[in-house]
Length: 556
Image 1 (cartoon, rainbow, N blue to C red):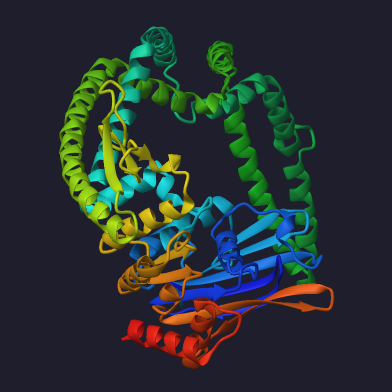
Image 2 (cartoon, rainbow, N blue to C red; image 1 turned 180 degrees about the horizontal axis):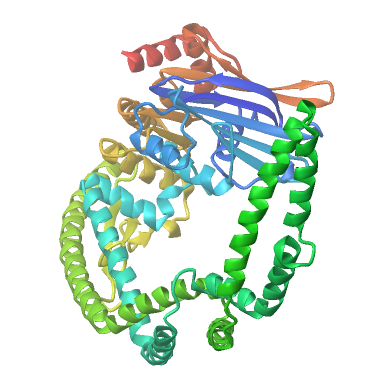
């Protein structure tokens, strides 16, 4: 439920902070004081369209914060959690709207930037506003359908029908796509078959290209490598004055000196002489066994050429050819099984279609039964609300079976007849806002036990009524408040007397600025305000007594 509303610089409201509790809250005040401003501000927090005209006193921006307690609202918690917007450390959800002077606005949910659409979707789960203006959700077809399903306890069945329809259509689309692309698949199959055969013939192994490149470089430089090895061997031991012979002479010269200080040098030279001889022997064996193989060079060159040719054709690298071969093989297997896939999809589509129609027909029967019961109850309620000739009807219009809907096999429409000589008309054709408000009230009273929306707002639902009917309206609103939170803007003392919480709105001129003030009334102040609403130029002892009697009777 709504527990706090903060409004800053919104139209003629400079700053407003209101705390709300459960039960029924009435909002009263003289005409033109701005009673509906709070609801307009709340609508902004819930995603209503904004413009620069909502800013007051030429300020830079307006800001509205609405805090809702959601600990008992699992649907809202799930919605927030699915979008990582749930505050795990609080049982509350804060909707914030900031409107700049150029008419642009920004929305926030629990401090996270959010779209106006998300504010609106979340707002629809938190609060339902009934007025004579654009907030009349009762005029929407989806709202009428939801009310009927909630009243008949058919919400889960409706969700099942919608789920089956979605799955059926998804699989039907897959089947249609497969069927319409048969020619393309045939051409693709031929291409892949040719490519697979080509790659199978190449039979390139993992790492083969790299190994061939290394071998190719070695084979092409074989003659130069042999010449270098022979020259090095001559330097070591095969020339007229090889390095080993020179090293031996140097070693003998130093040994003859028999000087202990040269012992380390002699040992190093001796070791070097041995290593040079071993290196010369190894190099000699390498040269003796060195083979220049033109035939292998040609073979490697041809193999690499084939690999490069296939790589260019497939626009890939030689190293990726084995992976490409695996992908083509897998796609061939899939295309080869397309007939089997289509048969399986066709069978699944038939099954889902059958299940959908079975569940949709069950839903249609359940809705028809619930509609007749709701018709009677709302019609009876309308008579107590000053509409003795009111006749409420829910019409279920069958949908063409060739164009089924996610919502079932029929469209739901609420109709009303307000006078005996009139035909029933859709609610959205109603001319009287007061009548529509009373119809909304009658419906909400009946479906309150099944509605999942925790807060209901009624903006001047008492237009066009008075006397005993006004008292009935007040009693019905208080009855609704036993099931959830009610906010009601009213001009009628009979309705105001029923409130658990009473907010009084007034307007004051401060300098050149007009400001709206909202005060929470206590018991005595409530009685005084009810006395004012009873009429007269001044509040008399008689009007106070009448107001007190009305208030105490309502509260008791």
